[in-house]
Length: 126
Length: 367
Picture 1 (cartoon, one colour):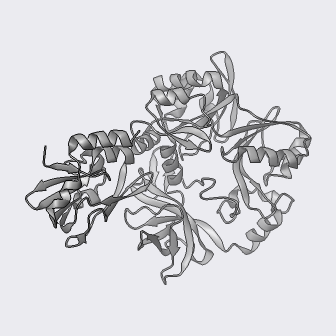
Picture 2 (cartoon, chains in turn brown, red):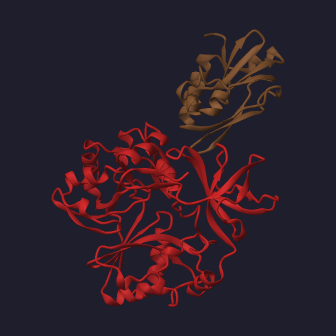
Picture 3 (cartoon, each protein chain N blue to C red):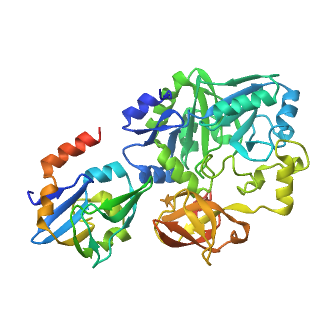
């Protein structure tokens, strides 16, 4: 799908008008291992591009989740907080993290498309 | 140059994710991942490569027993042939250099040491024994742990008689055309065995256990299993800044050694009599947040009172679990604490160890 973009921090972003749905990539979940804890930004909070917007923890370590673009958080997926194993099961579908009302659509230009990301992920894991 | 165990190729074949641990390239997990590996060990039988650990053989007769009692705080004279005990190597201040398992064997003693400490331990023990005995840290032996409720059945099929061993006892057994040394012990809170076997037979042995239904388990699950079982990891929960009494391991000091001499004996005696300032406790956060090592612990009135030493998510207890040291006055069961994680104070409670208690008929959760 052409409207999905990816960041170097291994987040994906799906665009629907001026609303972006954001989550972490399958590649990220494979690197992290079993995720056992997720923390999401609060509804109504303002997040800045490349800033921290949540945390995931695997049995091994904690990792920050960054937002690939700026905006206002309009929804957060409580289902993954209640059952973090959903993130490993379906990271790029059911287990989205949060939705943003996009502040500046131009910020999307800095992100990668799927082919670019796949190549990036392959190279960065070597 | 990272060292490899004799099972390195087998780890690769089973798609292990390899990490460096104490100078060895070791599997942290295989393709099923830590949670599945953890649960498989609790319900079936996991195989762990622990060949990085030191296997120190000390050869000698009665004098050796006496000389070793000057080093370790246990009653070695009472140890039966092939019986094992948990103990410590300590300095004069009763601080822990290493924790270990010592087993009486017919030629002397076998001591299992932590990988990161084994070379230092050898040097220290050799010096304390005044070079009087032959000490060998064997590099030609592998160490394999088989853990879980099915371990005894799986191992018995290939090694006859092994299921009759009692906990913390061992013996020599036949495998293929060689003799292997097996003890009934482990580090997971499960029934299980540790097998000392020649390097060139290790892979064959593991393959046979795999074909009988057990699975390879990595160091990641070994860590979550031992934490649920409330067991200490050297370097995290005990180290050169803690004594066995502070670590709440008083049970491992033999009662009739309390008034006798060994390194740190005066301090141990004093701490048993008049108590300690800090003590290791089990801690359960009230939500899913994980408090890892070095997390600061605060009291109900916001005083900093200690530090977490290990913390993870316990897959079998389905809860975040931790252990750490707190000032003695905050160590009572159900004392409310706060753990500072990413700037937030997470409510938690002092709880009993272990988090997971095995009842040999069926598993019992202590949460």
